[in-house]
Amino acid sequence: MASRPGPTSTQGATMKCGTLDIESIQATLNSRRIGQRIEFKAETSSTNDEAWLYADEDAFDGLVVFAEAQTAGRGRRGRIWQSHRGASLLLSIGISGQKHSIAGDWLSIIAAIAVHETISKFSDTRPTIKWPNDVLVCGRKISGVLVESRQSQSETRNHVVGIGINCLQHQGHFDGPLANSATSLELLSHRPIDRSAVAIHLLHALDQRLAHPETLNQESLRSDWLSKADALGARVTLEHNSQQHTGTIIDLDPTAALVLQLDEGGIRAFNAADTSLVSTEYGS
Ligand code: BT5
Image 1: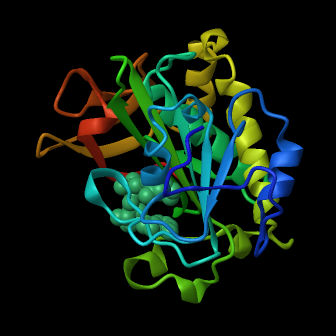
Image 2: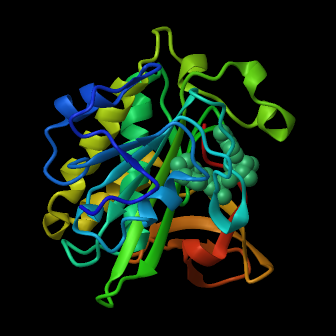
């Protein structure tokens, strides 16, 4: 890989960063695709920005970029992702469209499932996925996923999957609206949280599904997601093209769109890119 300003390679270097131990993550992972190369930044604008720097290079596919702090962490549609230095797991994963291609919408669903499994393992609770890709515990958000897609030089679609998981925050870390809407693994678990172990579990869960996505069974992903979201039969109100619609969730369609039986009549699928959930009666 050509040397460039920006991400700092950790290959061959001993790097223990607080409790985020990149070397042990690299040594333990044994991945087939996700985490073949790992980069670390003490601080960056956004790990998604860092991952995009590699988009035209071979190492992009499966690249993982971690950061301890983001100065402009982002969510969907220009929203902000907040994190205190060293308290979260902040990472982005490059997925090349040339290799084992997979639609961006399904990447969101796969990431949400992998995060759900990870939160289940490291907290003493049962999380819920909130469509399309938030993970909540007791109605409070613990993780968010941001999938960005761009055309590559070879006319295929590249993706960056950004994931933030609140790990070590205490209640006082969350201020403003987050005080009542956010939580962390530390707040939910009776055991100390080792962010490196959380990272390894998450990357392994992603690698299992993304090493050979052509073998993924869309039907089993769909039902896995539906059960982890407690979604079937849930009542939701969502906003699409500035209009609100209320209905009951009856399915997740093959493009990962939420399918509602609308109160106003009819069945309609809403894609994640253009739709926001306004309120929901699922998510425990
Ligand atoms: C998301 O967006 O939830 C996607 C967040 C993705 C963050 C990761 S961190 C690594 C990578 N690099 C980035 O720059 N981003 C990704 P959205 O569904 O739009 O939700 C954003 C909303 O979540 C905000 O408007 C807040 O209400 C809430 N929020 C922000 N920070 C939070 C936190 N730490 N914990 C819980 N909720 C938060």
